[in-house]
Length: 552
Image (cartoon, rainbow, N blue to C red):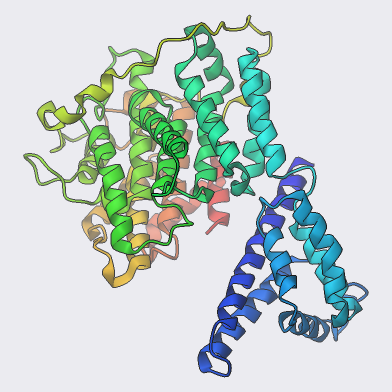
């Protein structure tokens, strides 16, 4: 039932996006000079988008799918709909094409659309009504219910009930997986930022353990990462309260990246920061986007590659200290994916390596191949960031933790936190692989998307070939680390299965048709080694690999 519900919401979200694209294309076509070649082209494009809408909505009422005339009848219905002269029909549909529409807009669409489309025939009226029903948000999931869930999560936390709070946040996370805009309203955004600030600063040590147990911070960061793309972004006309909210969120996200966030929290924070810097709603020129991207992420990347953070942990460290390197590498991988211009920008200091190159050098040579790296620099180059390590949480303001509860909320923990049996060195190797793959993919994809104006250069053939060979070596050695330095840390069955999963899924990501790397770098022998992982003896590794293969 849960999978069916998620599939239903996903279909509705796709239909809303398709309808919005059609309405935009129709407005563009109407704005062209009548009878011109541009007008005919724009009108044809709008009609194609309307056909996509029809494919996602319900079939015509009273016509069997086996009827040979069904296609012609649907074409005539779409043509009558597209050429309707009543502009109010399309204004009504534009209101329900957004998931944040109000219940009154939904009611108005149901009441007025049949009246305004009755001149197009009974079949057209029925199809338009079905389109409105499938597009509109119901009473179960809408922006008001999401706002209430966030408020209830806050109130449950204040009542010392983290379990219930995590359940409400899980509901929000599930819904915004299909409708990110539902958590991007001004009220929801404000409450989420306030909630994040409270759980990050205003808790006692006992309450902090409970927050980690139920994954509250991870859930909030995940919601912010998914919904930030629909947020309007900070503008010059914002009031002081809005600016303060954005600054508070930014400071908390940076702390999660640099100081004490888990790998999932660090990754989510970078994605949220990227969406806030360059929101989808702001159509900026390439130089403006690149400038904002570098301004935000170059200082963060410089802090992440500092020797005090980017270092292989030794055996004398505590387990919590050891795991910090995984969070740092996860944050670097997210920066490489979200901000390739900042990742590949020219560095500073005594060596010619830029900040991103230092991260790549560490990930490939130090972690994977066990070599001495050229990026081991003195801390003097990072003196501007020396204060970031000593940031402390604000003292608690007396919130008392609740008594111990009998149920351990393993079900509330995020998906990536279940790997308790995997060693830190194994997770460090997997995070290093993510850095390398995200850098290659993001650099090539962004360079192609931005065209001749892009200043990005594709990774060298030697580097890409070395990455392919390193991943294949892991698979050929049945999950053994490529460096003998890490072999003694990754001897368990779980570690080796995780390394095989990581290497195989990332190889498949490099074989994406958009990258066009497979024919050049994946030899027949490599392909046979990779295909053997489709029958991996570990069920979790096998499922993950086959899921990645199905997405190609």
